[in-house]
Amino acid sequence: MEKDIFCKIIDGEIPCYKIYEDQDVLAFLDISQVTKGHVLVVPKEHYETFLSTPQETMHKVMDIAQRIGQVEIKLLGAKGVNILTNCYEAAGQSVPHFHVHVIPRYEKRDGFILEMKDNSKGLNLPQLAEDIKNTL
Ligand code: AMP
Image 1: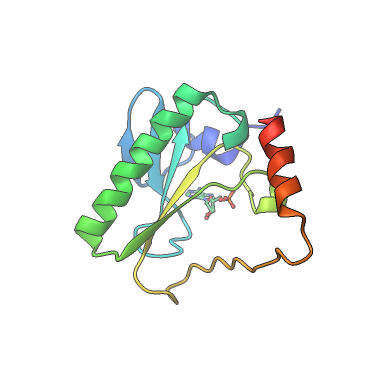
Image 2: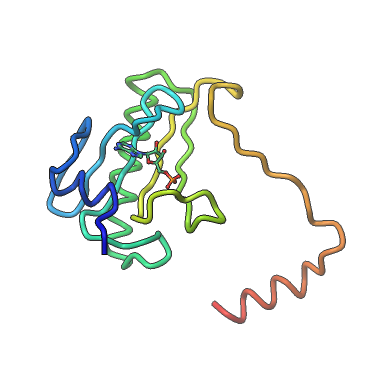
């Protein structure tokens, strides 16, 4: 199977602007810089999405994402941070290697748009909650 682009970065075959590295985790600047300071945090071991990543590895990735978010506020003057991970194409995932976006936010119209519409009309919320709860 062909290596994904993040595996190539981890293996040093493609350059990146490195922010952090330890034996399990790598963090580097996202090439697109949706906003100034947009960082990706990835596990070095290959897992396709957040959903299939072992808990211990996922915790290590989230720990670094939290620290980078804190620095973005302190150093870059961001007013907020979006922590985002897309799972599968339907959710906007384009690189099939678990990664967390840490996106500093400066104002509402600053390059990152996330629209959450209210689509609750007509849904049976008690039943929906029960179904999800019983499958956890
Ligand atoms: P997603 O759409 O959630 O899978 O995000 C993939 C992200 O990877 C996008 O924001 C891209 O800009 C970023 N990306 C793709 N190739 C590179 C690269 N070589 N170095 C840094 N970021 C990259």
